[in-house]
Length: 502
Ligand SMILES: [Ca+2]
Ligand SMILES: [Ca+2]
Ligand SMILES: [Ca+2]
Image 1 (spheres, protein in one colour):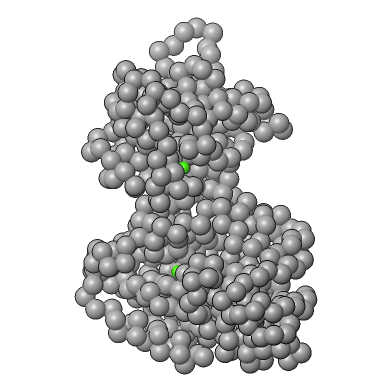
Image 2 (tube, rainbow, N blue to C red):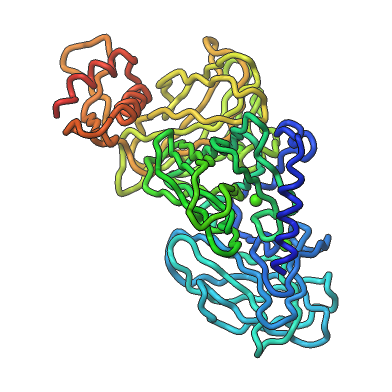
């Protein structure tokens, strides 16, 4: 088994060719199914396999593949990174086929512990599927689920997928070779290699490089992020950055080839859009024979409440259109005529926090070459004009963040083309933060030309008051947030100067 995988890997290295990434895109195209928002079904073929187990194609299998040949003792399929937001007992559903006339059993392992023997009754044929359920205890965050043929079990029964309820509330996985608006490849020499037949990797594909400074950036909305990849004896160290700030080196050397590992994880980021960058450092563990870095998949920890535009109400000529690359597969477009709008009703603030200024992150596309604006209404009142810079194409998405004042309980948010706005801009979805900002816009006793913002503290952004550490990034983030709150850039600068000595 190990030899087969090594063979694949050697082929991948020798297949580096002179293909640039652009050529690869033309050959393979972006995979629309890779964005797994809302996924609660883990495909067995995306798991790690061992022993005699192998991935086989079957048009009746979920996603077209399954794991078969679980014949020899010790053969298994393991799903890593089964993530749930809360620890507890979950009833998982395993889809399988069993072409033998009798019931076959397998052992179910959760986080490395044998927790149950699962029976798989006959399904009549190998391409006829049925489901069985099992109750498992999962821990908050990442878990592993393995189905293995142990000595007390019988051979065969093909595993298609495992459905885990509630998994969607935690981490969202994005493949390394997914829709290009999430993933940015930095490889001036074209030395990042794509291997589309990498068994055992997520989605059976991976990208790798050992050229210093080759990197992949993943942009996500949420409070946490993971880089999924492999360790091996020829793997080196990666330089990891979040929003441009170094997170240090991550060593991906391992004595044996292990796939779908969480190589880096960061939580407790401020709610909003962030970028993770993983770069080849060119340095390695002394025991390693090379500097290779794998990019297999990324996961983000969602936060806030998501409202899809296509679930809202539209008017004035706006219409729902489907797009593979839109969140949920659809968006609202043709916001062209004056009065065209999409409205999100029942935007609820959490009962525990109530009224306040909440971050509102709008995912959109704008295929025009210039910035287009739309008017933002909260509870029927226009509160601001939102600028949507060009995204390069109508199926390429970006996110903008503004802060809006919401009432306790239910609110309406409307994005509308008014006469002062230009046509265009497709709206995909919005995220409303779960907690309000500490900072707020205040109404001063005497009128001012500028917006006045109070309770702003740059130490909330990681600024160091002692002067020992460089606080440039923290101060810039504070300025950006000040701008999001509605203040003019000049006002943000003055506010910063005054609040710095606190
Ligand atoms: Ca499957
Ligand atoms: Ca992959
Ligand atoms: Ca959408």
